[in-house]
Length: 514
Image (tube, rainbow, N blue to C red; front, side):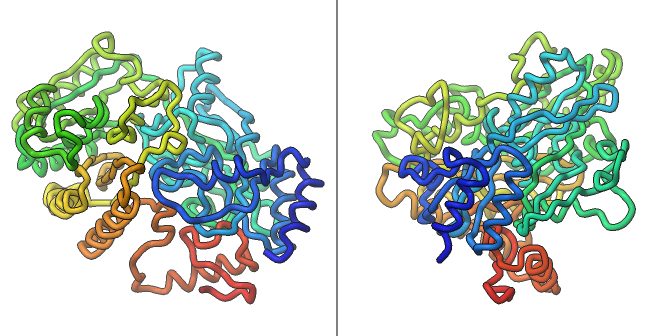
């Protein structure tokens, strides 16, 4: 950091002074998240092209100034735009917002990191495309590439988003350029439709890592189904959950369910349907059990709520899928209901990116969610923990037995969700929603997060992704992976200037892991 001022001047020459921001307002925005942060940011860079990203990285590498790349900066609940360590210059890629390629026949879309889910959806709608992207529970203004690199999950047949991308263009910490798959070769027509080329596949190196800055990515799209049904059902008793999970696993493995199912507990349902009942509780938290039961009755909810979509190219196929799902699930879910497309809101079909699920971040706020929600700006307190759990009823019940009581011990409602994004593994997602204006709540939320992750790790259920509240896993690997990953980091980023401390070990000035 001794050469920061020299680097700032070099960046001004490379990308324009107006795109190198050091004003207090901009820095305050990028230092803010939905939980307490202490990291300080000396500057924000906003390059407008891959060539400008390369120039920024060459300067950072030469002058040994750390940088932290973000795409849309809306990684709410995991740290937003805040770097993992103080002193990192934020590299914002939002100006790079072009759709670079689209093929309706081969069903793919190639974009820069500033392209959002809302923008991509509008692009396809304007062209009357028969294709759809996965949609996420996060904001419509979130970046496609940013979400994919964090291995985020979504709705639709391609809900395990990173499994359906290829042809990454990556700027390495030294400013060098790399293309994965066949994209490195001239006139490689199959680059956007085949993930692999000759030799090792490199795509995975750049997801959940700090080995490079991805400036381009191709997303494979799914056909829009002609016939759609939404299926939902309430579990009156949480003891049904294990059996329901086992039956859902069967439907996922055999292909009846082509996309994720969602199991939400009552607290999660409350937080999306409304806000904390401050008057009824006279300001006390967490929600009393008697009021919890009353809210269930008033809103017609069970202890858990199941929902999923059935999609097919024809009415006959979707009816057959519903018949099979009903036969498998009715024994444990007698209230299962199947809705036709015209009976529900269009957003519920997951074709339109929606801010609906952001409501849960405003659960403990005293004012309603605004029309243009920004949980960072609005002071929402919110922390995510997402753990991978084998999709067997016994495992899910065991993991929930750990995850449910701990938030209550710290004064938070256990907002819980089980997602069946892939057929063999469920994501158990815990949300901690609170009011940051209440003294001590920030510290209590982070203490609860640490206790949850520690307890889940000790039980053998490790995170599916991490936020900057825990930028590296709180567990020690039993193999040599730390040394191998450290060697990769040292080889690609010899001065350790790219997102230090994020996912992979940090490298000191001598190229040593620390």
